[in-house]
Length: 186
Image (tube, rainbow, N blue to C red; front, side, top):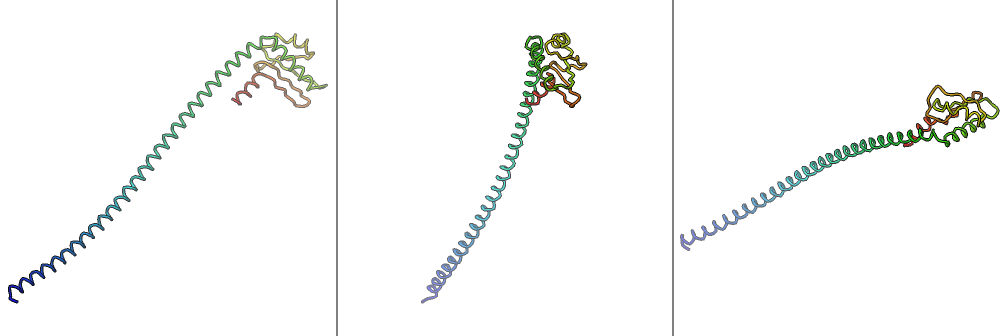
């Protein structure tokens, strides 16, 4: 073999070795880049997921706060409506009671309540109070029931109050008390 041929063989061999080493280096570099890219993408995805979760938590908190504010607003509105309804209802009841107090039925009601107080007292003394607005009915009620009535100094809206002092009993059949009891149930 001649020098030229030897040089040619050496050159081919050297080029082949250089190409194979170059290919190995390029492949190694490419693997390192792909590994780094995969790690970068994984980190980026983790950061994105974390940011997404934090934003979701923030939005849920805002939503819950707005829902709570709306619930409170609705409760206040409902309470105001209930209060207004209760006031209107109680005003209507008072008007109807005032009308009722001018009827024969009210006279019969007072008579029945006075007799009931007399029965509860039995043989003991009982003081039966009537409302100042019922003073005009006093004589008629005393005649029907046989009980001496006392006109109260306090306006209790109608009905009667009776006291049996010997047994410390108060019989309160006044309309004011009955209205207060009903108001607590509304």
